[in-house]
Length: 445
Image 1: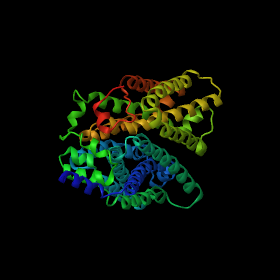
Image 2: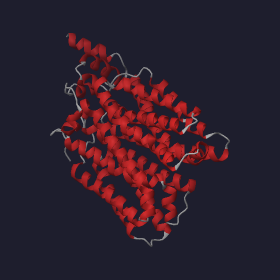
Image 3: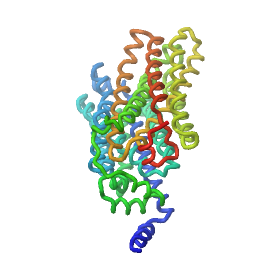
Image 4: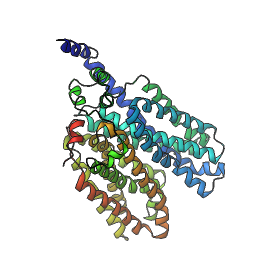
């Protein structure tokens, strides 16, 4: 009887409308984090020339500053994931956005290459930490029937942030007298708004349960989560996670899949998107603002379509066939050296659309195939591996285009996409409609 009274009192803490309002708020601040991440990586391109001239940057400094955020992500994602699994999601959730706001605000006052490098590195660390805690939090609070779409929406936000930043940066740089300091610093306003929106957000009940704090977990689950969520939360194992668990007999397949899939998905994307102007120009196509924004807009459309389909048709069907298709498309571009420019453009648009679609799944799978005790560090590790791929693609693309030409360069990109397709064909599971406990425990196709 006492247990029934406690259950009733817990359930009376929150009505369905209040839970819905909380979910909307949680989704908004998490999606905002992904928008900000895309914005930061997209805003530097349009002002890079002005910035280089003002600071008298050498080619080496330009490369270091452009890569600083990616290096920061490489550091921040595994570190943030490890800390969030050890000490909880909430403190890291607040720390990373505070660090971001401070570092972004410093861009208004930078007057040396060294400080710009430091600031962009700090912002990258904050972004990496956001990857490692944001996606796990979204997975842990989302209802099973909406989880795919809500996590897919974070992908939409990233692409939208990248595209909008590129557009805003170009317009402010070309048509106003605003300094590059201010244009880069516009990310501060977004960061401060997100920090305020995150104040008072709760800890993840799943994480609390996994570390043995069951009473707190029950109270928060009843207050903030759907009525049936507590049953799944109570199926969580109470055990301490570790980095070594990622490579244990039980979880090495999950780690290999999410890391390898993410690496092969982003490597050709970052290479082609970052140098859209020069890539399109090599094929006799118009670049400039239209080229960069055009490819980004098509990519955004691919993410939106995936968002609409993911909880209806499932994960695997949106992951495996599309990677094979992109590998074929890139191979055709590479082999058909005399293809008419309009045909090449269509092929690039097809690649951008479908690549962005399965890139959305790189956000979804890590939160689903790993248990709570290593969900943060696993997501962070996979994000770090992916950024190695992004850095390799960004660094090698201009060198390969100059030394080997567009054909061989596209064949290299096709090989990377082919490797990702083969890996996903082997290991990509179907997790549609499963609870997080079921998805992590039943790693099957």
